[in-house]
Amino acid sequence: MNVTCVVDNTVQRRSQFWGEHGVAFLIETEAGRVLFDTGQSGTVLLHNLEVLGVDPATLDALAISHAHYDHTGGLAALLEQVRPGLPLYASPDLFRERFSQREEQLQSIGLSLTREDLDARLALKLSAGSQEILPGIWTTGEIRSRLEPEGRSACHWMREGEALVPDSYRDDMALVLEMDGRLMVLCGCCHAGLLNTLAHVQRTFECPIVTIAGGLHLTGATGDHLKRVGEVLVEMESVQRMHPNHCTGEVAFVALTLALGPAMVNPCPVGTVIGF
Ligand SMILES: [Fe+2]
Ligand SMILES: [Fe+2]
Image (cartoon, rainbow, N blue to C red; front, side, top):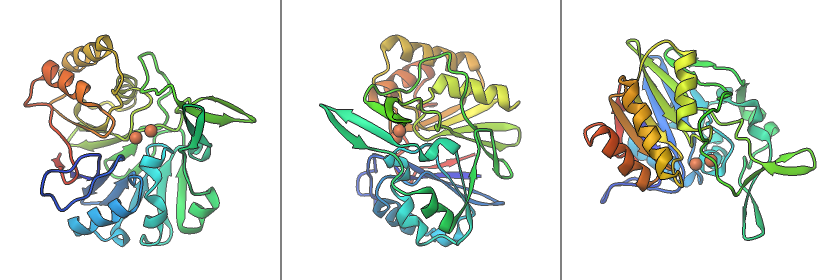
């Protein structure tokens, strides 16, 4: 099983890939190809897939981590090129309106497509529970228990009836990949919180987590919380490799490296292939 970073905020110097604020991963197994998230523009996603030599028509499934534009913005362009009836796995809360507020300005940052738009091209598989996408590839389902701090931004709001309320991030989920009894947790933005997500995976799946990759949303985390994240990861003992990117933040990357050692914590720009 290979996991390739297709969209991220960073690209390596002199790379043919393009970068943007957002994330997408391609998971390839003997059973097929799954695209997890789509970046924000579509332009970057399609360019990078072309560089990788991956025709969108060969995808076997899509999965979406949550509604935010930097994970769903590439969907519109992608829909033109995927095979009709392609399954899309996501939370039932995907279509709720979501906003960012900065200096009184309210900006829509949720999914730009309607449910009808997606229904016309895809087979929607929406569930708050864990779903198997292909053999060895599952969604976490909704991260319900959140005893640890979430990957929250104070400027994020969502529509609740007529009112705007702080975003509950109930749509946020990660993927769980299983290979030979070992797990990789692949995060989109991890708004539900990294420690909450890992605890949920440990409760739901019986195998040890050896790899953690993707956006961990530790930007803005306190020093105390970063210290706790490092301690929990060390205590888990099973984690052998991390590939944080997107919204993890440079301070968190350094904190994780100090806690776990440089051999375990690796950058994950576009084009990174995580063998598993
Ligand atoms: Fe997000
Ligand atoms: Fe994000």
